[in-house]
Length: 103
Length: 172
Image (cartoon, rainbow over all chains, first blue to last red; front, side):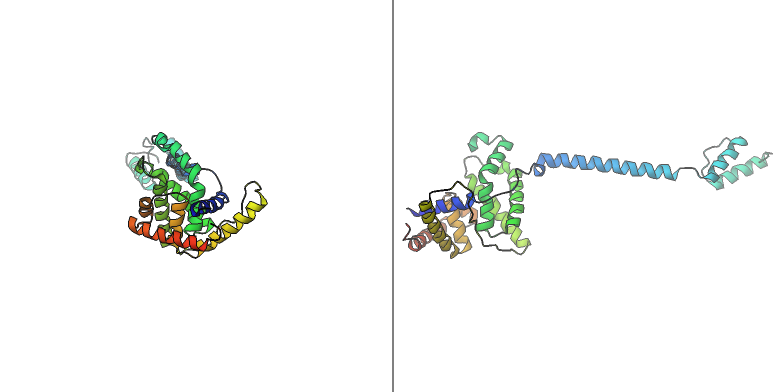
């Protein structure tokens, strides 16, 4: 037997005994990575959207005091309903009094 | 076969995967002395590199030399980053059909003798023998893979073959 043939037989037997688990790792290919990146970005966008929505709705939920203030504003026909602070509301009430208002 | 697939990226990659994954895995574990776990990770990373660098492969050139150069460089980088954990074991079990018992005995003894002979060699020599006698790479391609002058490869390979013939003379 020639050396080349013997070595080839030896390596062939060795390589045949190798068991590489799994198939082609498709998730690692370039196109799949792009898809994965898009899905990842979409998931994070939705997640961030939900968090922001929850924060905004919770932040702007009127408290009981604010609701009562709005009632007062409505009752005394104060036009400026964009008041978003007690300070502004006080100024508006003072102006109303100066103008002969009942508030 | 390769030239027909040169424009089909996925097809060429599938061809490489089917034909070379076992050989590369064996090369990584048995020749480059990576553990089996590292070998699996490295094989995946190498296949990723191969896929991404598919455009760099020049049709007509030896695909084996190209693949083994990528695998070798990646393995060296990996070993630089982490301390290597040599396993030094080769695959001994066989999963083929039951062969003739006489052949098995002779082949088994011959393979044991080859194993002992290869074990006594330097890593680089074992690598050269694998690339030359299993992958059938030319001296020039071997030189490109292991970054060695072609004349040095020739000289060293001739010396190795003479040594192997001497060690295995009762089998050859």
